[in-house]
Image (cartoon, rainbow, N blue to C red; front, side, top):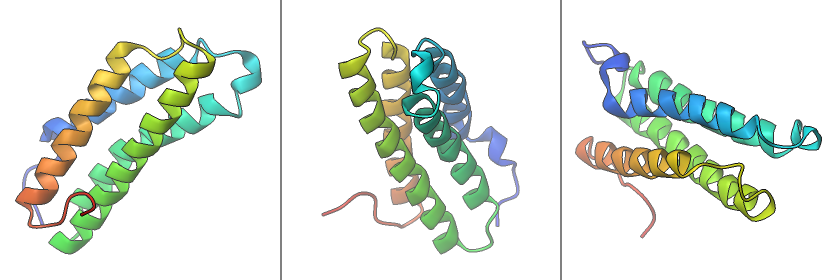
Length: 122
């Protein structure tokens, strides 16, 4: 579908950076959260960047839009988990992660609109 590699997409690079930030931040969580918030937040961050990449490689724009929607949904999941984490463990989630996540969510909305898809709910 697209000629240039997905690695050149700013939103993909930002999402990849977010994975590193989330892994670093969640390392500070207590050992009891290894299979709870830590695991959930890490998987959600990986899902964002992975869905951007997978969708980019699809043949049809409609498929790409679906995967960008999945990435956006994972971003919403991570946002919610970061709020929960912040309430329970106030020092565990950095402002850097929340800022990067907000930037990614905005970029996904813009990209979906540019591709002719619906971004968000009415």
